[in-house]
Image (tube, rainbow, N blue to C red; front, side, top):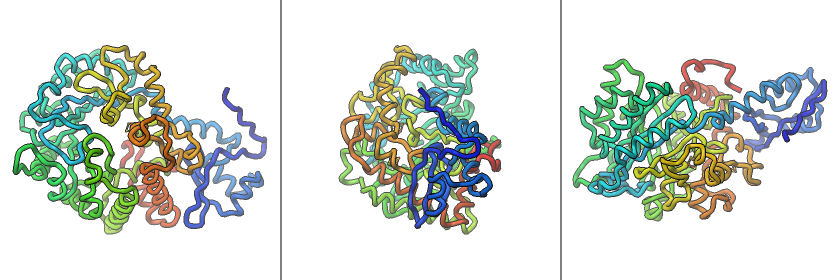
Length: 491
Ligand code: SF4
Ligand code: SF4
């Protein structure tokens, strides 16, 4: 039964909060997100229920919902609801592994791709249509279908089949239907591009930084093939078409950082700038698939990645100070959680995470997994069933419940962490580390990286006024148009 909060008529109840000591300041973070900085004397008075309604501090903490009063209960409840809004929608991201084949042999490949000539690893047209039928059983108003591989363009006919069939089904279902394609672009041609543009398929590629780093990591099956030059040429070509269409879209690019880039933060950021991007996502390498076999050659420690990321963010801040608007995606997601009431709905950093809740992945053979990484662990721990199963049986299955539960950060070590409201566990990572869905290893590398990133950003927010202004600009630029510039969403 829900606990009733009894609030004294003229007083307050302290919200569930956690404390972090940074730069000799007490950062008080409430369970629903808003935070404040208090000195020891203020914190002592808040704790001892000694704040008076006439004090400015009372009004400030009431506005943030850090203390609960009769006046703010409704607002705090709706902010809680927004923070967990991903729980009330259903899976909207549907990732189709259109083929397991790939014409590249990347050193860190997460999904153990099959050779380019092994057509038995392609999704067939019938499986594709049944997958679309299954996807439409998800109750969400928006359905986003993402084509993944291997190299997805190796099975372009089935991509076409899915797009055309989904559009036909949607004539009666009337959902908001979106498509995206993840590809190394090496097999792109004008005909494929025109189809993708005509059907509003968003294009996302991989770009690992400089030509040297990219070509070292992303090797083609064809000897002498320049993967970087091909990707760059198609990025420019696609952009030219967007421009012709008057679209404000851009190609997206994903970077994977391995050991040969871990001391080259500036170089990879400059490479993105030179390719015309104004954002980069500095993500650490997952110890999955081929990457785990060659981890001793391509991996690095949490400390090395933290140094890399912080150096990158400092460099990006410097670029912004010189007048260039350039952003980093992890920082934006974290800052959005720290500074606004709007849920960025980022599947890898929520509690519960997006696995089963917001995303499902369909393998080439009709098996359904909880998320993209769930298919890469080397066994069927994250396999929920198959496309012929009933949607509601699969979503309500014991396995789906176990996966969702294992991503909730209510464990003792997270429950004491100030960043708990902004963070979440990754069951795939947990499974890779401990062969179990129950996290046993307190403060593993993932946690170390996240904690250092949250610490770094919060320390900057509370000690550097210019950064606090810039952080709001970064977050604002990523919000839906109608919310940009809206001051009320900042807490
Ligand atoms: S299980 Fe891990 S990789 Fe999969 S959605 Fe959750 S956080 Fe992301
Ligand atoms: S995973 Fe680490 S950083 Fe995240 S809430 Fe748990 S203890 Fe904090």
